[in-house]
Image (tube, rainbow, N blue to C red; front, side, top):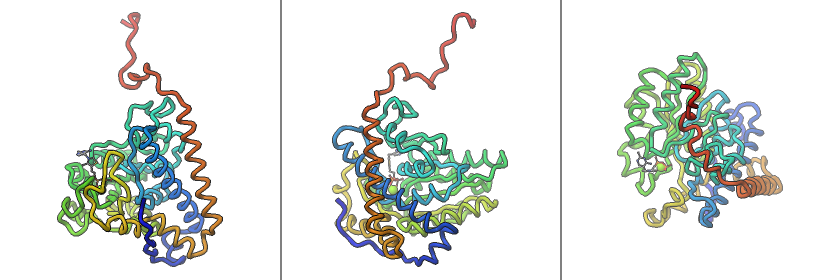
Length: 348
Ligand SMILES: Cc1ncc(C[n+]2csc(CCOP(=O)(O)OP(=O)(O)O)c2C)c(N)n1
Ligand SMILES: [Mg+2]
């Protein structure tokens, strides 16, 4: 359980929100709040189910909801998302059905990957969300390759490459940023610095003062943003994507967030996180900070809050109920889409 700590207030007026989110800013805020609560509810429920042995694995994105929701809302349908480990909520915000994602978590017959991928590794072709590779950093070069294709086709899309603080030490980070900068490709490199790479704190991963500083080595702009501040995050993403779309070349944004849970269901952070980490993380809980701001500005009432929570709970429970009532994939599907169908003798 996260300690009860008051959230650090967001430093924004409603005029700031209007400037950062544009027309329809209040409705964007309400939608963002609903998605954040859905993400938080799903994480809590799935972690409990993993402990009960009902799903095999789960990696939560608790503490990273503001980045995920902002990316989902700020990107367009033609853009591409190459996730790191914790961006599944981006796919949902972009339109991937919650039920389909939960079928994937249960690896059942209605999982688009028919149970072949580890839970939390969804594929969502219809929303340009490419299946996550657990091999740290490889998605960075994949996103760059897609951006190369975008240019060749003459499209105006942007490829969003997500990766953690740990991934900035991977070879693919170097190759990806270097190639994208030299070729001025439409990629937005989004580093979610949650300050841990499993048990390794960021200070033992990199000696630079900020991870965004690494961008300069490749000749592209990099900036650091408070990724627990939904409004600042949304503003940075829209600004970055607009500049890239208008031909400005790639950029990197480092979103500083707090990993509020274990690395995954296979980890126990009590063995390595210092005293005080959980309280510091709780004070920077993006959902609590945004909730507080919405309440203070009068955009969220007590009734509204309960309605959103109840709706998220119902949607998540219903998706789980359906998944648990769905059969496992047929054994015969194991080789489908893997090998070409055998040729009939008549074909020879
Ligand atoms: C190439 C590679 N090396 C090591 C691992 C094992 N591993 C899985 S997650 C992880 C840490 C990733 O940290 P970070 O990039 O900060 O992402 P986060 O989990 O914090 O979101 C490591 C080392 C891996 N999956 N792939
Ligand atoms: Mg990390």
